[in-house]
Image (cartoon, rainbow, N blue to C red):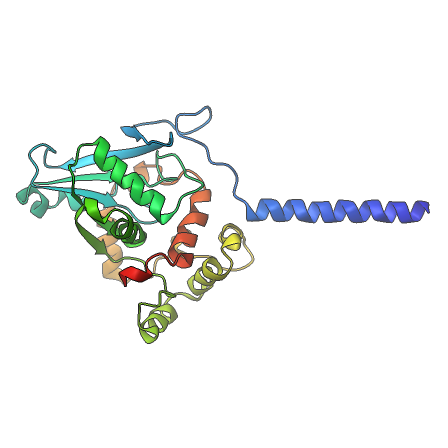
Length: 273
């Protein structure tokens, strides 16, 4: 009897340990909020959204009150509000364009949004436009993974858009609006580790955090900083973000879960394609 009780106790401890390890592996730690005790400092302007979160932003280009065009810039994965080199272009000056870039939820100095969706981020942009006085309509321009946010703006706040632009946007390879052969060809050109990361995000989104933090298999090259670019592309990118090293881009890991799930799991854009 005593031996059976000992074995049962050991079994309970082992199972409990495995469950605890699994929980920690699958769930990211809570983020450190900017301005909170122990959190990163606040270094720039922010607006307070209706749900109490703060959204950091940065203005560029022509003065807002005289600008002919007002553009909201949406950065990609691993970027932030400071990555707005397009706002410093000669054409932007000549066309009198006002730009405002912002840290997406969970990046830079913007509070994370654990319930973030394509729709919620589009509404964040609408509220940013309202609080900064951009008028009834403004433009949105998305880079790379920021492209999925622009798709969201087209779906959820089309009445606020004067226009929308996408620069090298990330796409969902399972969108049925794309020709299957084109999607398959593009998918096969990804690094093997990215093919797996995308599969996980699409088929088992609850595994995204574990997959991109484990060390047993190669994880996403985007997170690892292993970009698939030609030498010329690398040169251009290095010139686009000369000040990147001076800024804290991401607060913590939790936003990675949401980014990959939104990009490769969501099917909300079918009526746009």
